[in-house]
Amino acid sequence: MKKLIRILTVHSVKDLLRYKSFFLLIFLLLLADRIIHRFVKTPGKSFVLPRGMAFSHQTADYLFGQLPQHLVQWLFTPRIIAIAAGLFLLKQVISLWPSSDMRRMHRKERGRFGVFEALLALRWYQMAWDALAVGTLCAVLGVWLVLAFLLGLSFWAHALAIPGLLSAAGMALSALPLAMAGFSYSSKLAVIRNGTFGARLKLFLYLFVRWRVLWTSWLFFAVRIVVEAIFVAIIPAGALLFIDSFWLRMLIATVSATPVYSYLKMASFKFFLEAYGDYALVRNEYGNYYDHRYTK
Image (cartoon, rainbow, N blue to C red; front, side):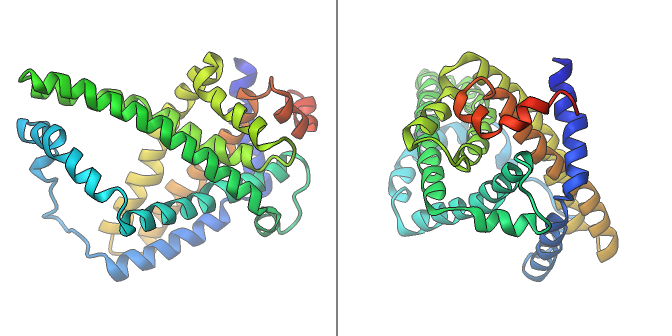
């Protein structure tokens, strides 16, 4: 355990500083700042959360009584399909591209223009496999969410609206760390050059069927969700939306988001290597890393 903690902390920070992987994120934050202040109106001091956010009988009636019909109507509309395609492309930018870069780091192949070399190193079949893995993950999550809905529906049908909401929400939220792990692992397995589609998909499914991979991944990504929500979402978003001074809001946003997000990406890659270190496909891809990871 001590060795794992050292890998996820000391080694991750060392590699982060060595490869300076956070400079691109600073540029993206600057771009986001310009877009937000050009097209989004700042809520101001009168901003309050809507009352509908609370658990209530009305919320339960909508969730269990009306939402299923709406979902059936929305699911296969061109707009939803376009949004899903856009989200997948965004996933490639924030996950597959950095995973390609970190693959080269851990194989000692990264050059001076590592970020751009990582982009050029991507192949169409890696994107296709990532799409397959993401589709598989969405199917598994879909089954889990249906079960969560049916559990809540059973309470609601017996006039227990609030317990129904709590049970459905709790069951759905419990899958969030594994969902994040799945989206993370899909890109890391996609950039592996060796192994067939089926062999990598089998490894990907170990997230759900191998207890060691499942519980350690759930715990790691539960912690990551909390840290990322605070330092990468809440603090930067608050700064970009509510602080008038450009330099002050960029200072707060970049100091909070860029090093933390870059660190979490690096630590997640190293955690993946530890979680899948017993499997030949991953171990052969990063043999030099495994030989020297405890000697750094």
